Image (cartoon, rainbow, N blue to C red; front, side):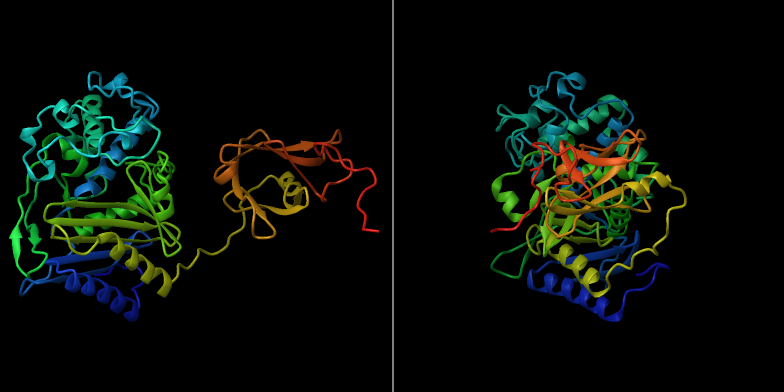
Length: 458
C-alpha cells in the first residue's frame, strides 16, 4: 500500500519484501506484517503468512507488548508540559505509599526491579496483582535509584498509576482521549478487536505450534497491554518523528530521545541506551529510536531513523522467532540507502539581524580552526575546520548570548565579547576564547601570548 507520496522504486519494494520473507520463513513465524514510513506517510506495507488464502494487512491487530511503554511515556510528558509534574519530582510527592517514593519520575525508567514477583506476569491474569504492592514485591529496588539504567516493567505500572491519579480517570481512558483519538489510532486499544492475529508458540525442534493465552495484565497494562496494527503504529511513528501540537511538541519528543539514566558499559559497547520511553540504538552507523515489544505469542518493533526520515514497523505472532529490531532496522536501511532522503531546497533567511554577520566566519581556539555559520533556522553552528573536534548548534537567548543545544556545549553559554567601540573582540565559550587568528596578539587569551610571537626553529 502507498499514499500519494512518491512511490518507492520497484527494486526497493522487492528488497523490502525479500527481507521480511526471509525473516518469516527462516525464523518460522506464523505471520509477519511490516510497514515503512517516509516523510510522515506510509509508503510500503508487506506481509507473509503460513495461513492459506490471506496474508495479514496493515489493519490486522497484533499485541505490541512493551511498545506500550512509549505511549505511557507520552502521557507522562504531557503532564510535565502542562506543569502538573516535574520529571525530577520524587514519586512520593504525587503517589504516596508505594515504598519506592524516593525514586524520581525520570528514574522510574530505570532502577526498579525488571519484573514483578512470580508467577510470570505476562502469562497470568492481572487479577493476581490487584494492588501496586503486588506489582513491586518485597525487593523493588535492585540498584540505587538513578545510578544506572535497569529496564523495569513495574516502573511503568507506577507511571500508569501516576497518570490515573493526576488525571482522575483510568490509564485506558486517558490514553484514548489524549493520544489515540487525536492521532486517529482507531485500531489501537487494550483489548483485541477483529480482525486480529492469534498468538502462537512455535516448537524449537519441530514445525508445530501451541496456542498462547492472551491475558489482561491489570496493573501492568501500562507496561505492555496494547493491541495495535501496522497502520496505526506507522501513524504513531510519524508522530514520534515530527510531533503533533495536539499531543506532544517536537521539543518534548526530542527530549524522549536522550538517555535518561547512565547505561552499563556493555550497553554502551553495543550501542544501546534508554530515553524517556524510547530505546536508542546504533546499527550499521545509523542512529535509531523506537521500542521493541514481546508478550507470549507476539513480537513487535517500531524503529525510526530520524536523520533519514524513515521508520519501520514489524509485527509477528510468535513467542520467539524473527528478532523484530534487526528486521525493522534493515527495512529502514534498505530505503535510506536505495533512496536517500532528498533535502528540502535551500532557502535564505527571511529576516535577520545584520549585526550577526560580524560573528560568522573563521575563528580559532588556540591553533584549532572553527567555522561559525548562521543557518536559515536562525541557529549558529560551530564546526571544526579539520573535521575533528567539538561541534554544536546554538540558540539565541535574545540578549546577545547563545545557548548550546547539543554535545559538549549543551546548555553552555556562547558570548561575543566586544571592544569599547562595539566591535567583536573574541568569543567566550565557557571560558574558551575564540579569536580571529591563532593566539591573536592583544586578544584576551588566558595565560597571555608570548610577546616574541611566532618563530621558527634555529
